[in-house]
Length: 347
Image (cartoon, rainbow, N blue to C red; front, top):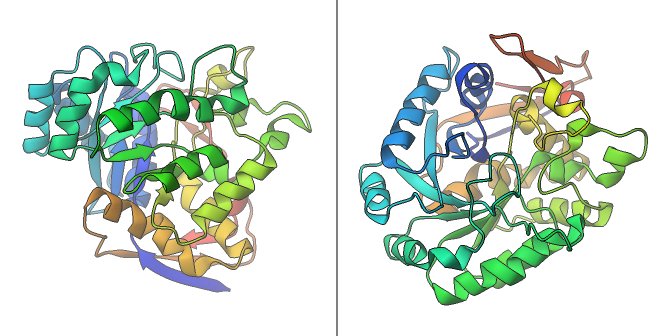
């Protein structure tokens, strides 16, 4: 048996959806994580402080009776033409708004309201830099002429780098890094950080394609090659404080995943910690697990590390836990990570 005690972890990128889906999935995040940085890509997107406050209240109401006592949703606003600088600053001052998220229009789920050029929002970015408001970036080009596996690097070069040069002092997180290009971009910019998902850490494109098509593993940015996966895992386990977990847990109904044109997104919140713990265990790196899960993120964002703790224990395999969660209106959602969850318990 192996056991490790760490400060309570945080999830620095999560999709909780709304309505019945929110009620079904929010309890998993609220039970496992202290802070949850909630993405604003609802329909319509969360672009004002009032919308963020209302959504935050719905999340807390949906968190359920088993939510951690210190569970705290951190709210982001969606960067588009509807975002008003004065409202953003007021929302941050009021403690309602935490960050701003940029989606390239059409890059992923509910990104249609996003932007065509990050530097086109230079006035907002300058206000954010002055107020030290974090910029969260979905780093993926939408240029159809660029190979899908190269789109992270293309976005970083064509959009994020010029914006950072034009607006020095930005606090930037390159979210759900999927390639070495993302790792290298963070390393080249002092004070920048990157979140990495459990599925990008543990899967490569052969898992999707080699033994029958796996639409449940389709996400954006796409899971890349084995070499890229290994580089991400090495960065996560290196102890580098620039990298931390962001689950990018993104539930979709099975009818939207196992269909002719699958929606992008992997629901991993229930077993995210177990998946990451098993990866670190397999590489004899459990001594660095706390940094990745619990320390690096809050330090990047200038927040305190959790005073509470959790204990992760690895024992003999049990029967795999459930792989499906069902919403109140009867919609099934597949859960990623059941094999690792059969090996670990969390208390």
